Length: 132
Image 1 (cartoon, one colour):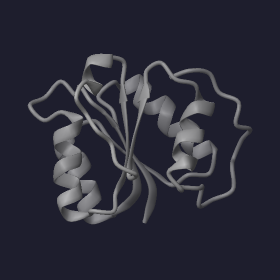
Image 2: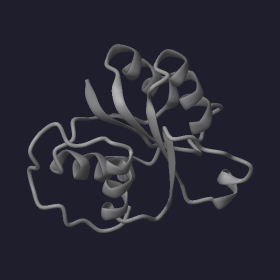
Image 3: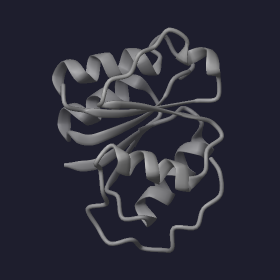
Image 4: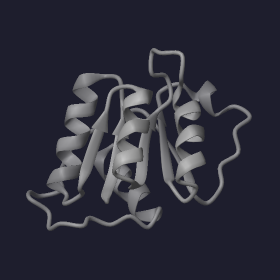
């Protein structure tokens, strides 16, 4: 089982986030599209999903998570967005958090750990990172 699945349509943000999480010791899978994320979760469940909201496709992050949780109800999720309007009218339960972009690596790690997800491997490098 992977620790974290990262769903992000910006290649640079995706690559940097995945590398930083792997360096911190997390077993990470990555997806650029909603369908890809759902396929990965079906074949290899993850403990946590980091999902961008605006994916530039018909499915947004909320849609992907809804479908993912139909198969894996215990999936923990941290939504990522630079648009505060994405949070309007949304209520989050104990399995769900949100982070506003830009955020620091420390903020990301703290949010992941608050969700009860810890690295399954020893860190490869120090944890100093800049913002995403």
